Structures are given as C-alpha cells and as structure tokens.
Length: 325
Ligand code: ASP
View (cartoon, rainbow, N blue to C red):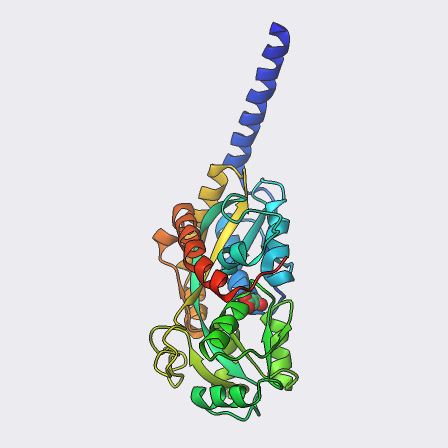
C-alpha cells in the first residue's frame, strides 16, 4: 500500500512538473482560435486582426477556425470539450451571455466551462437593409415593416447571435414580428442583403462600415450611445426614437476549463500587446470600434463582464419568452 501511494505521488508530481514546464515553454506549436460564426463575418474580422498580432507576440502561429451554427453555441461547445492545453481557444461575443438564458439544453455551462483570457473589443451594431429597400430612415423602416409584416424578412445568425438579440429587441420595441432567415453568420447574410434575397438585418460595424460608407446597403441607425466617427451621418437609435436599443457587442477570449493559469496569463499579456498594436488600433477605428483598454484584457475583467451580462439579459429574454433547445 505504501509503495502504491509513493508511486502515485511520484506520478502526480511528474504531471504537475510536466504541466509547469509546458506552461513555461508555452506556446510550442500553432494555436487554434475557434470563431463560432462563418468566415468573412464581423466576429471573424475581429478574431483575425487580433490573432495576427498575437501570433507575432507569441512567436507561434495563431490561426482562426470557423465553427458556425446554432447562434454560436456549436463552436462554444467544441471549445468547452477541447483539451485544456492552451492550443484551442474560443473568441466569442455577447452571445456567450445571452445563449446561457436562450438555450434550455446547452452541453456546457457558460460560466463554469471555461477559463478566461480577457476582453477584446465592444462593437456597435447597425440596422441596415438591402440597397433597394423602400425606406430611407428609421421611421420609414418601422412604418414599412408594420404595414408589410408578412412580407418582410430579417436575416440573423441564429438564436444566440448578436443579430438575433438586436432583431429581438427591435421587433419587441416596434411590436411587430417578421419572418427571420437564419445563417451560419452575418458574413453570408450580408451577401444575401447585397443581392436582395433578404430585406434587412442588424449587424456589427466590423461587417457593415464599408458597405454603409460606399452606399452598397441602406443604413438606418447605430446602437452606440453617440454617433460614430467612421459613420458620422448615421443617427443613433436613441436619436431616432428607440432609446432601449443602446448596447454594444463585447468580445472575449476563453480557454477550456482546466487550462493552466500560467497559460491564460501568457495569453492575456499577448492580447494586451495585440490591442495596442498600431495596425489593430487603426483597423478597428476604421471599422467604428475601439480595442478594450489593457486592464480589461484580463481573465478577471472578462469573468466579471460575463457574470454581469448574464444577469442583465436573463430577465429580458425571459420576458420575450424566446427559447431554443
Ligand atoms: N457576429 C456574428 C458573425 O460573426 C453574427 C452575429 O452575432 O449576429 O457572423
């Protein structure tokens, strides 16, 4: 028995030492960041910009993998079940908080299935429509929708996506429901808006700024508290009469539960470097968003934000009564 205990403690000590050594030499190979939406969309854009800058700091490739579907919950579930070695990460947004209340049977618990790396950025949303949509301002859009509710279509990236949340708030505000068309991400949804196959959507500025500026889509309002420097002609939703539609889509980086703290700390440091990278700052500004300040690119800040946001959205989701299995 004594011998068994001795060899067990040697085994445990070896594992602990191996983990410590791994944490010290981390990263030794390519890191995968799962984006739970389609390529070419707004979350993908944020992830690719940050991953490139983190790659330079970490001295290893940081690649983005798109695992879309079910409003971001498929990609999140994939990371929750991945090995906790620091080589599979998740970059997700506000959907991490809303899907915790929207889904009845998630395979992971948003608050307890992950280690936290840090907050990345908070992106405003914009309400846009196909280029030939017959409404030129927010009031006109609302009137047209109310008069043609059976014919109007709304694109979103599934229950739990930011576009779903924004559409849910908008439809409840104007007390009119329209048909929703779900996509794996708003990247492919934008293609259909541009092609006129679907009427309107609410999407992050990281996907819409250039299309709005070039006049390729119609734009009605932003959910930011102030007008955006990159889109100065676009009124805020509050200015246009929808005061409840003021919110931002915050993004964070997560690792599977059990990832060593040294690893998440190293990633957090690297995220802080990436967020001050001049190219990241400049590209974010051109997409009407700002990197989070250094002190928010930490595990503690992300965990606190997720806790606050789950508590913020739960009552609203419960009162809207929208659930998914
Ligand atoms: N942000 C998602 C995307 O990247 C879409 C969404 O949340 O609505 O496609």
